[in-house]
Image 1 (cartoon, rainbow, N blue to C red):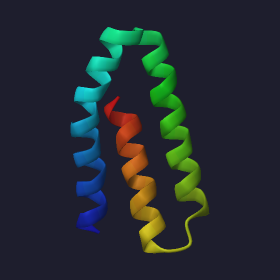
Image 2 (cartoon, one colour; image 1 turned 30 degrees about the vertical axis):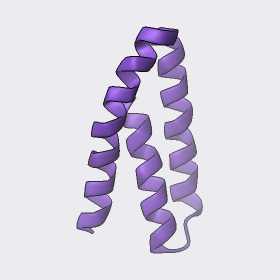
Image 3 (cartoon, rainbow, N blue to C red; image 1 turned 45 degrees about the vertical axis):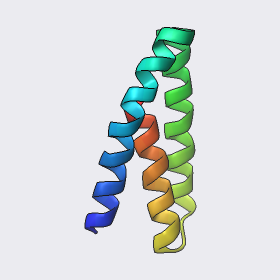
Image 4 (cartoon, one colour; image 1 turned 90 degrees about the vertical axis):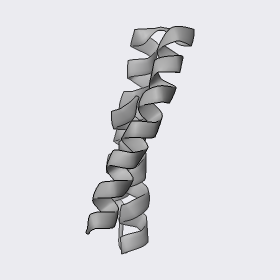
Length: 68
């Protein structure tokens, strides 16, 4: 259980830096659209997950979307 929390928070922390750079390069609105799309993909992965590994991957993708 702790692994899933750390994966989400860790990905969000790392991709917050990436999100900042994307904001500078392409602007705030496109970055928000990318982040929303990534978050939606992560939610779909979680919805169809049938095992723990897929859940961890889905949480990582959610972390990317949250961080951006």
